[in-house]
Length: 177
Image (tube, rainbow, N blue to C red; front, side, top):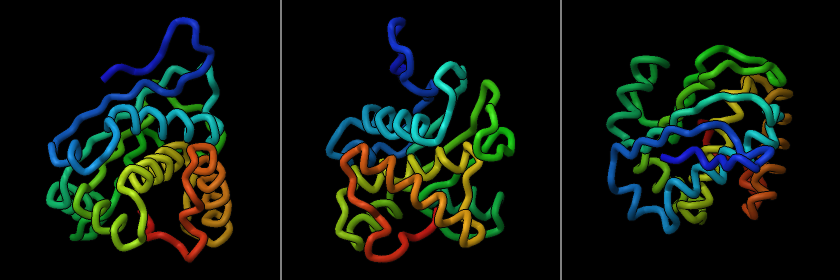
């Protein structure tokens, strides 16, 4: 995948390595997956406080419930699929400067599709929301306690509004990633 940078651009976002492991993603999403990934991650990088001059990389894998379930069981002790897994290269606190590799994001197609349908969202909007959520995790944001969750939700909602996506928490919290 192209990283979306142009020599004249002051800020476009982190370098992105995209891997589509489950080809069904290309029919689930109405727009080009690469364009949606770039749009969401660049917005999250800006909104999440990633300095514009930082040279860092994030990998995004579009996978299946089966693969995400296996990773979730191995790394989190939860033998079930989840919508997105975030694996930071280094544990950061919000505002910390990342190194050359920020981390990995892995999404489960079937879970995303079920959630979008159940919540009346387009798969494209839910996809971008999960990518924003995941990148914020890589940048050190979390939702383990009420105060952290509220701060992360406010940040996510503002970033998503900039992408033209309605507040996903307006009618109650979305399932946590």
